[in-house]
Image (tube, rainbow, N blue to C red; front, side):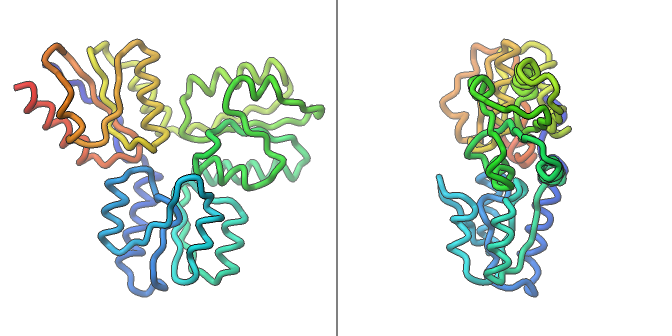
Length: 288
């Protein structure tokens, strides 16, 4: 069976920077203890487990905002994840006297900065994102005046009288889905300023998956909670290629590869390369 390894794959620069900062904090005893991580620094369970082994205290709970999670931290150091946090989280952490380590991705910081600028200049601001994703939570926390758009119906139901409209987006979304939403938005609000902020790493990975040679199956290696990994699966399917998300080699046990002549493999921007390598090796052993 032919195995195509799609490039690029694995960690993006933002993830590399966040993990390097996290590891430095855990190694340096001069930081106030304990070392708390407010949510998962990146969306990958294997990475989070590794950080825990090295002394990190992960504060995370489904359906709880970063602001609510902060109530469980009273002293020490708090590490903000690569997804960014709202101004209210920053303020609350400072009021608690916590030492703050910010690993927010540079691309996410730009979204925050531009959203604040346009709000200050009197614009009606919209944001294309996934409601409960931490990156989206951080941006919406900038102001209650930001309109969240997740689907076409949200645009149809949107009532804005001002001609000064600014719209941007979560950095890890599907470039195709986001482009369609922008097209629909412009038809209703032709004077709006469109600021597509899907990061370059996300774009390159999605393009590579979409433009790949036809195969019988495309495997995306990534965590089930990773937005950019799940979007890669969607992109492959839109190309007409069957695709699935695999977190680790154990999940390959019940997959029958005997009827396949070719597969391709890529991974999300928060997936360690060693996990992908392990999965590739496990596939090779299954099809011998």
